[in-house]
Amino acid sequence: LASWNPSYERRTVVRLEQGMRVGALEEARSARMNVNTAAEKRASATLSLEISRNRIGFYGFNSGVNRTYGFLNDPSLPAYVNAPNGAGGSSLWSSKTFLEITADIRGMLGRLASLSKGAIDIKRDALTLALPTGVAIYLSVTSDFGNSVQDWMTSTFPNIRIETAPELD
Image (cartoon, rainbow, N blue to C red; front, top):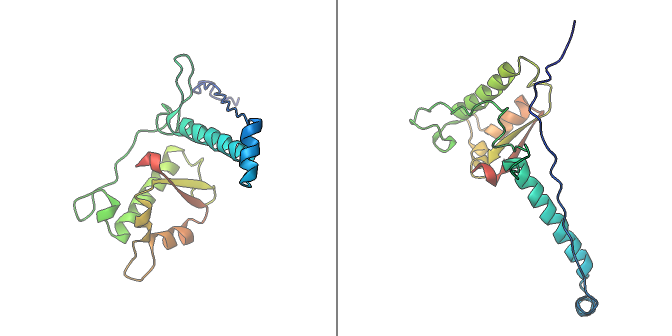
C-alpha cells in the first residue's frame, strides 16, 4: 500500500499590510510639478511590501508563536557543505581556476541529486543557483579555451537559472 509522510514541518502564513495617504494640498502641490503623488506613493508601498516579503523569504518571521522559516534558517534544509580547497589552498572562488569552479558546481548539483534520491533531475528540472552578489563575478573566469564558467553553465545545464542576492554575502 502506498502512503505519504505526514511529518512535514508546519508553517504559518505571514500577512503584510502597507497603507498610504494623499492629502488634497499635497496632491495640488505635486500636480504643479507634474508629479502624481498617489502613483509615487502607491509604487513606494508596493516596493516596501516586496522588500518585506523578500526579507521573510531569506530570514523567516518570528513573532514567538509561528513557524515561518526563510531560505537561510529553515530546519528542514540539509547542512551547509564547504567547497573543497583549490590548488591555491582556499575554498573561495576568487582564488580558483575554471576547472575548480566547475568542479564545485558539479559537486553541488551531484549532492542535490543524491540527497533528493533522484527526485530532482539536474538536467531536466528548472533549478536556481543562488550566489552572493560578490561571487557572481567569478562566473566570468575563463578556461584555457576561452569559454567562461557562465558559458559552461549555459551549455551544460540550460535549465539552471543563476540569481544573486546580497543576503548571501
